[in-house]
Image 1 (cartoon, rainbow, N blue to C red):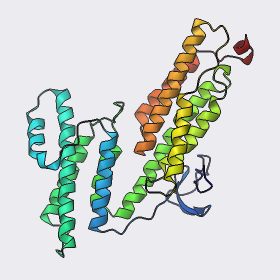
Image 2: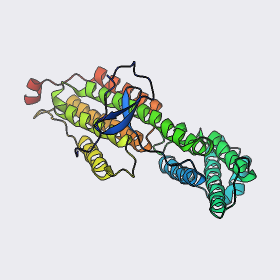
Image 3: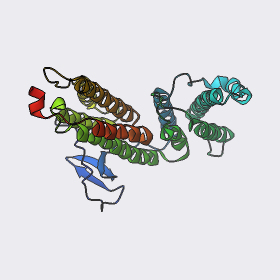
Length: 320
């Protein structure tokens, strides 16, 4: 990491600090939520142009993290609505509902783009403008439909992402930024929960000697990446550090005895699979920058089962 990279304060930070408190730490303004001091960014001016750019960015980000096939152009909204309303199979209706949500988001973006173009041409756009109301209705309906859409991993939905474009439309841009810091802190909490469960699983086990340091470094780089925007000047160092840390965890090889038993071989294979599952979910959370509590709880439970199933290998046994 470069010296410019931020340091994430641990959850041991005193809980008496009010949420939303801001401090200058090593020359960088940070805001406090859930035990973390999150890097802040200056919000753009609250204009239609700023909202348009933010809605576009949040919508693109949403489509990057949800299941495939739902990024339907806004001009196909009527077709998407018909397909959804006529579908009777519950499973297919859920998918078509996701496709309708995608079309609604894109329609809202189309409308907002035209409104911004009109404003640039000198046309005053009031908040109660009919097109503004239609844009809001599209985003609101998409938000409701999006609650059943899965993350691209198929593990769970990420409702928080569906609400962000609507927030960008309905509240000041600065308030949107503040709401993001809360979600980033919650995502960091998931990252710590997952990696600490993995550390507890492998710490003191000679078969996985050295992995604890790999996990801790991966967790820290993940939290730093979570708080960092892609437009940040440090993104090249931060992303590469995170990517390499993830590769080191994925490629970790257990230290088996010279003549391992079948049980020890199974333990090694299971442990590697578990470490890669944690890595995969942490990567998903880091990229989406939102909490995925259901998936995190499931993997923490798998760590608990692993500890109950396999004894930790002593250093003596590892050399036998």
